[in-house]
Length: 312
Ligand SMILES: NC(=O)C1=CN([C@@H]2O[C@H](COP(=O)(O)OP(=O)(O)OC[C@H]3O[C@@H](n4cnc5c(N)ncnc54)[C@H](OP(=O)(O)O)[C@@H]3O)[C@@H](O)[C@H]2O)C=CC1
Ligand SMILES: CC(=O)N[C@@H](CCC(=O)OP(=O)(O)O)C(=O)O
Image 1 (cartoon, rainbow, N blue to C red):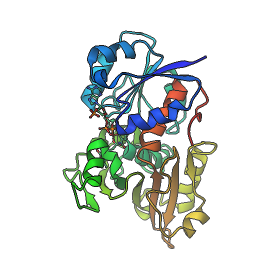
Image 2: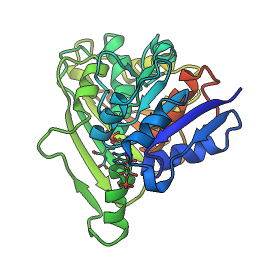
Image 3: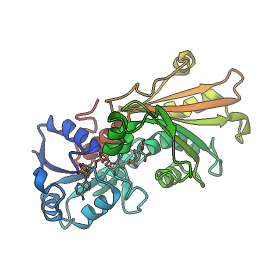
Image 4: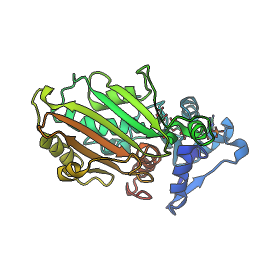
């Protein structure tokens, strides 16, 4: 049995990588629009309503427009944009986030693909909040650096065609990054973190990290307790791995490009010798587990296929 899939925006950064992954899959029949009509609403509407699943790889407004074109009650939509991430009728497409999330994705016809930074932050924060080690009122901070492909075609052109000489720059200085709503809702925290993103002169990959003063937390947890929580939470997961404390202890530096071209996310729990401070670190590919890999994982779930098909 084949499943018909339409990627709306399949020549963009995220869409193209999803297409490359799906083109190799015999059980997927990709419906494509000719270049001359790929932005034409009536051509898109016809494609959207003729398939089993649609993956939206569009700017937010175009994603909202695409959803308004749906008439087929059976079509499943996976939206890679920010438009529906905290919408209550949409399942948040982070299967590993919490017990029951994978089933919610499987059962839903509307799935939002998480933001790349949000994936790293929630992967680190949610298990600790659920375990009661970090209280919901905790005033959190998250620091991150992303490859420039995170800014889509325009940022890729900026870095590759001489539009900027920046090697590393911070941004979102107004503390208003678009991932903050999903970071807050799905971490279990009551207030948004202080989020300090940066972009570097490399195409793909990212590091997201949460610094913690362990002595200030209500139960003054030991590093090993945090590690135990992550190890138990992600046990058996194909795409989220937790480095052992020994490995983390031996890791003196970490490359943001470590997991590029994969759908993997690696967690390190680093700490100081006295057990007073921790750096919780997630490494992932902004275009992998942070975008196109996660979209393919969600598509597999939505179509009731093996979740790992077509992914490394
Ligand atoms: N890059 C990343 O790391 C991540 C991106 N995302 C999200 O995925 C979505 C796509 O991002 P990304 O691939 O980076 O962006 P790009 O700018 O690389 O691609 C967007 C594509 O959408 C096309 N497009 C724009 N408007 C329409 C329309 N009305 N109808 C049809 N196609 C249209 C663009 O056409 P044209 O080629 O003519 O400009 C372009 O090909 C965004 O919402 C983004 O926020 C999510 C996670 C990570
Ligand atoms: C480097 C860079 O600019 N990154 C993008 C986020 C990319 C991403 O994952 O965000 P969406 O899924 O919400 O598009 C940004 O900070 O806006």
